[in-house]
Length: 293
Image (cartoon, rainbow, N blue to C red; front, side):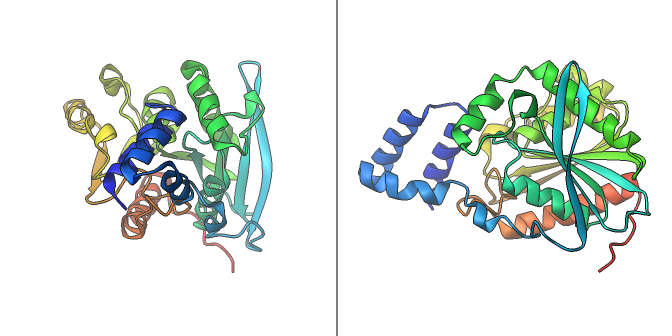
């Protein structure tokens, strides 16, 4: 697919242009409005592709869990392997700017199948929860109060640290908008031990000296919007003596881990990043107990 189309869609999904401007520019690139409408399904998420781990996988227990913070109830998708007698490290999974959708729920199940107590938080739950309409979800994410949202993420880490099925060691994995939140959470949460940010925006550099968690930062080589901040962020992390690792996946687009999006998914980059993420979490949180088959 033409990289100009992918870049244009990325600008739209991150609120830099509106839907009408996006469709007008797409029509210009493709030659007609009809061609633009025909292209749209190829750019949007197809959640029928999202179930790498099925919702009814017999090895897993899944439920809705919630906690209160700042007068709000925050809920999410709590998943663990059925070996309930074993305590395990916990991982907070933070969604993109589309909320807790089927793809992120599937990522949460994958993390649980790796042996972790996995919690896919819905940071739109205090506003009524993630809607099925992705455009509405993006608008809701854009309207969130960032300090309040960060406080909810900090509380989610504390919820997992205190959970009876947890060892108390908590990590976070976030994607796109959620990756940016992981960067902020690494400074804000005293209980977070490890953070993995997939193509997330960098935090204010004056916060870097206060980062407490080890960081693994995955970036897509073609993601010019996010990558502009890598050099300054890495320099600040190095000067502050922080524990961090940066990987850039050449030839990959923003959202390369999202297998529900055929236009941007990169299987090779996603598999390598997941392998690195798994090793990083095990190193910093402890090796989770084996999952019974």
